[in-house]
Length: 88
Length: 420
Ligand SMILES: Cc1cc2nc3c(=O)[nH]c(=O)nc-3n(C[C@H](O)[C@H](O)[C@H](O)COP(=O)(O)OP(=O)(O)OC[C@H]3O[C@@H](n4cnc5c(N)ncnc54)[C@H](O)[C@@H]3O)c2cc1C
Ligand SMILES: [Zn+2]
Image 1 (spheres, chains in turn yellow, brown):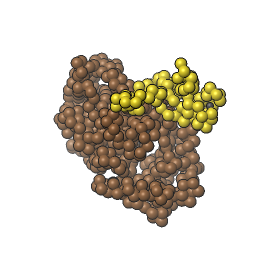
Image 2: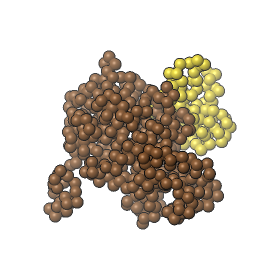
Image 3: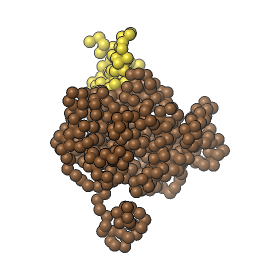
Image 4: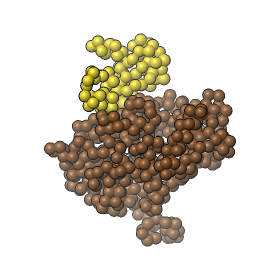
């Protein structure tokens, strides 16, 4: 599997650290209910098909990326920096 | 069971002398009925064991197992067959201890040869800190009533002379030896439970995918399948790597992310590796099958996947770790590799519990350690489905423990699904 970093171009999967589903981008605010923390940290849609997850280009530029992928075929469909995602 | 109905050495001889004409299909192939007292979704190890113990321990025989492929087509036929009871935390410790005791009586219980081989497991350590952790784990195992021996370097060297003891990065300093651990024939476990359940009247329905779960006023009433609707007041979801999709049919999100784990087997060799050996620092473990193949693996590929095949970086990593630990295997040729889909939870421990929907139960979250758990999981899931109460050795495997903070993080790696 190869991932195209917006800064560095197409790179080997070994340069990237996988963190988990994009749910990690939606951190609950202070004082949120336990159920909100549970949903953020633990509960997952876990789709067989297209998913969006967080990768860190740890052996490259160090950017955090949102990767749109297919979990059944391992095809990478799109990559964006978290920074850009959050601007939108 | 007489000579001519069960399996025995005498029967093999009798059949051999009469042209092997008496062997019959091992289970029926029934069409689904309109309704059952209980339905189990998933014909893997856990689903089949649940059905067996529902019939055997609780007298529930008007039940069905619905399997989308053929029996044993999932992880039960893809794992590296290690059976052990070397857990540390209360909650896990008593459960796996119970499971190992069931393994020890399983062949007699099922009248089926599952080739359970208690060849012993050795977890290696490479530093003083790791030795302390191994000693602590060993003490917890002994306190639980199981067995553990801390091996020093000379003793380990006599048992595993082929290790690279003086590896520059991870010198081998000793190992934690669990003599009752070992392996079993994975398919045979599925087949043995399937046969036992079928003999007690359970309908095992293959090529029957569940496509919907019917819920009325907060109660489960049945399922939709590719072979038509089937009614039942009790439904157990036992679909391992596919648990997320099954739960979604009931409108639930589970604390599960599915990941691929690979394994490898070499050409058959003469007996060389007598135990199961694990090299935690390198993410590598190995045993030798009865056919002579070296069966080995490492860690998951680390990203969410349903592909049942892995990527090359994990292959390279496993091979490197194997070569670092036991260079003697370097000339063996790898014949096959494959992958299976693991239901990873944020604390690495499983779930056997009711759901918020009346009559709907879930058994999932086995990570990469669910083979050894098959007997106890079936036992406890059957207990839960029959009585509505958690079995005492599975009482901490709650669905809501992530919300309440009662996690069972055996490795202490934190709540990220791929870290266990
Ligand atoms: C490479 C590898 C190595 C492993 N090594 C070990 C080991 O050494 N020791 C150990 O303890 N564990 C090991 N495991 C883990 C163990 O194999 C699993 O945890 C365990 O088999 C999962 O439970 P199961 O047997 O019920 O799963 P499965 O056999 O996967 O059963 C689930 C079944 O549900 C069916 N299903 C799914 N969705 C539906 C639906 N909608 N309708 C009908 N049926 C459905 C599937 O077809 C499947 O047959 C390993 C796993 C892998 C992949
Ligand atoms: Zn980059």
